[in-house]
Length: 301
Image (tube, rainbow, N blue to C red; front, side):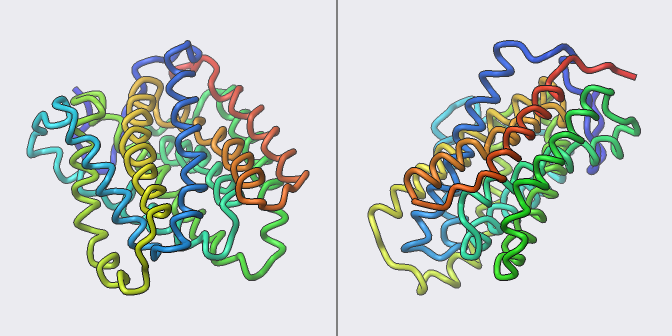
């Protein structure tokens, strides 16, 4: 039976190296979340950051409501964890990203988001009271080196320090959430859990959104970007991510985020004319090498 304490996690159901289903889940999540920074950048032209957050969560919940399996009930004993996930996986980090992107480029936000697997592994080690396997540890260390390379150019700009701080705080919340969702996903599946998490987050983010609606203007392009951001980035991608961490555990499942910068860099430089930095690209290659090591077979202790 999985642990029902509020702050707890579980081992992944699969300790072997990633197979085709895991890599497909990983690729889908990385592609959708990598494009999320691009959609946020477009939406910021017309909507306030808090309105973007509320709308994307609301559209995500609407998308999941269309799936009958998402409406299956959860036991009352698990609602405390659901409420916590609504805050740390949705309301807080999804509010932080559009605010941060007022100071930093979408590609930088996507690259900084790659630190999430490090926080996920640290929190998993604390909750499970064991360190990751040797390969996973090496992959995480290499990935951290890539994050240093990615972040270096942006950190030199004092005006972006606040935005960087917000992104890193959001990734800590993501790392915690990736661990907390594992037992729930293994018990109910991803769909009913994520629907409730998003409904909680809709309530938590409503007041800031309504309070800043006067700072927004209606724009069809921005609305289309938020609908895509919600239905795909908040609806589909979170379900796929929950499924992945339920299969392979939070530490190895979080390696998905290492691939997000590749998508963010391509979209930011090609479609938004953001500067292409060689050092950040080199850092991304290092991060990818770390991701491959982390995905290898996990030794259970």
